[in-house]
Length: 397
Image (tube, rainbow, N blue to C red; front, side, top):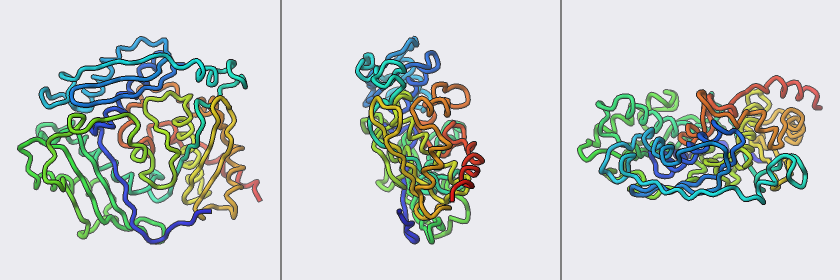
């Protein structure tokens, strides 16, 4: 059983929707959304590369959907805000190369009900997935990653909603927040780092003042003091950004996508993958389980691990770690409760969370920036199993 390190400083980073890797994640997930909205049974494993005025879409897609791959990709670029021609990357200038083929028949037989060795829908790959929750924030997320996300998300909102006032902001940015913990609880922000792409005429004093304004808005006042250290564009300038400044690839920001380095990570990326891939669907389910356990007050912190074999429906293992904060003397008792309350076969996960039907309320493209966890619109963020967990817990001795 893990123990909480009581007094320490922990740091997490986030990147904005305009970061080159995040551009790729959003294009891959925009393609997934486009496929699922027409054909919920689509099989998608879409990888994107972006560099100076070039977008390469590759991977394995089997679908009945009629999708204009080029327009979906450029639409994602447009939504992010890369619309200014002549800057090295924009919806007007970027060429789109499409290199897509169908899913391997060997994989398909393992994840299609009635076709595999075991007849029911199996996992799309082997591996282990993790989910985490903590009561240190209202969102039941670790504070450093939550506030790192909120900083760049708010800067992007200002850039889009008040374009004349913030004309000096361009889409690419990164943030980093260091928080001091005492007795396992966040007590003070020590350092904030923000690097934000800008126009040549931008004034660093103006950008620094804006960052401080945003920090005061998105981070609770009780965590802030006059001693917070700010580093805004510490190299001095950040004019060349996005895929023109650094080549982007799908799936390179797995820690940004999850818990900012808190807890464990199985190694699998999310974006561009349909829900037969347990790298994604089981990670969502583990977050759902961990969040409900914390919401049910069965632990202050909770990490859930699950493991699968390709083509096999039942998980090979389920492990729970409450870092010594659980209601029971043995976390194995929580594992028993989880198996009673939650179905964890791939088909059960997809049905429970309704993962094949993105639409107006939520979509995978939106999850591909500012974290897959901690925002209420996504179905894996529900806490609708609290009563069932509490009832099951009463039976445990």
